[in-house]
Length: 621
Image 1: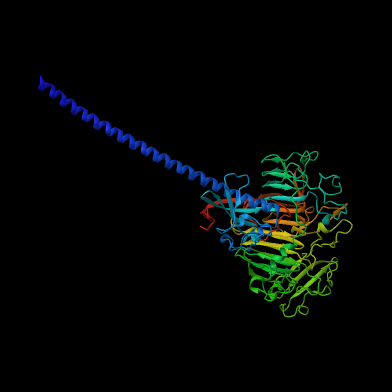
Image 2: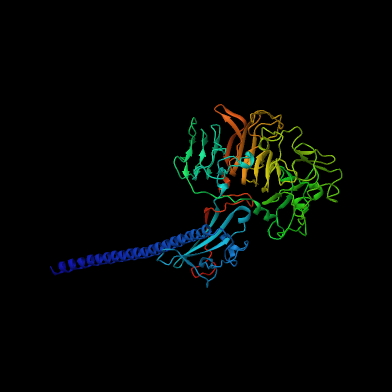
């Protein structure tokens, strides 16, 4: 009996021992699991804190960009400011503003700007790169946000919103009074009080017009059945916002109904652009030409320039001839004064400016009004056999500029260049029914001393061509590579599509006949076109037979609305029908040194995240 009890007890003790081992093992496993869970929770908490800190630092970086834009919109001169010691600004010319901006700090000892409304201590600082602002309109800002021990950095591309953001921009929807000859003040809006005079010739979008891009006008748009495939904006504060004349179909607005926006002010002239040719102030001076100048763009990246009156292609800001004339860049005088012209490489990412012959005798490009350029008045710079002639209203050679309405240039072995062409009738833009031969206005059609530039050809490169009078598109102007090439055409007194006619007849003050001297029909212009003082229009738009379609790839901006043709319910009667397509690149790319509005907002065109430029202590990373 006793033996059986002892055996049973031993068995129970062994089972209890096994149970204890199991319990201890399970407890250990549970402790390990709890420990792992706690470790994971702590790690997750740390990751969450890090993620939150990084996110708040990134938000602060974005807030810095918006702070910089606010400074730009409050002060149009702010692109010149920044910290010259900033690494990001090494290619720029910046200076600290008179009023301190804490966001311009770049060292450990410098300040940070606090995010407005932030109670968590989030802050930012930014660096400015304005090296491309003059040539392309692009500002770059590198903004670093800080939150606690975390920093994040973003780089933003910033551009001013201007005329180039629209396929078609117009200040006044009337024809240019300088061309119509009216004495009525047409520089007022249709929606103004008092309203614009009915004597002003309002121009409408016709049923044949198709516009593929954003449209903006400071005036009231008049629409007769046109098709708009982009947004339409007007500064008319009333209703209806667009005028549809009696008997006209409403426009087709495929991107939404027209909307209101404040007036976008144009600068009065383009003379500020000339400063880019000054040898002592421009970082990379462009070329200055004087008097009527013909430019033919060549598809190989060169251009051929004829400029008979030019004496100096580089001048200083004080009005003196530059000590060194870069003939390789802008052409030698002997070549410029020949009908064959100077063949030069398109000035890379730069500007060409054409001015009228100066009347100040101390100007290096002065030639007396009693003389025309010749081998004697411009000794040493004219090729043998060169002959330049000024032509008056009665087609006789004249001395001086009074009444001049044309010019011609010939040199041995080269075709004669002549404006007007042989047999060309005076353009209806400068003629009237009582005197169809009248060429003389304050800005004659082809003034022999005027700052006119005659352009055609295939553009390869990036260039802006500006003139203090007219830019004539004398043929197709197209891109060699539409994805890379950029061209700006800025005529202060007008950008005109050349359309010479002969045999124009008149019927009660209206031109009704005329035969084209060009022999072609459709025309294409790939460019950003701007006339700050006057207009963009077709020469002789209201005479002759239909010329086909005017295709525009780019942007058009003008003070006064310019007509390109006349039409009725059956289509085009004279001139051209419109086929305008916005160059979408212009939302982020601007032709070199293109004219900007006097007031317009800035906005971000793109963001990019990059490595942090500073640590949380303020030291550069």
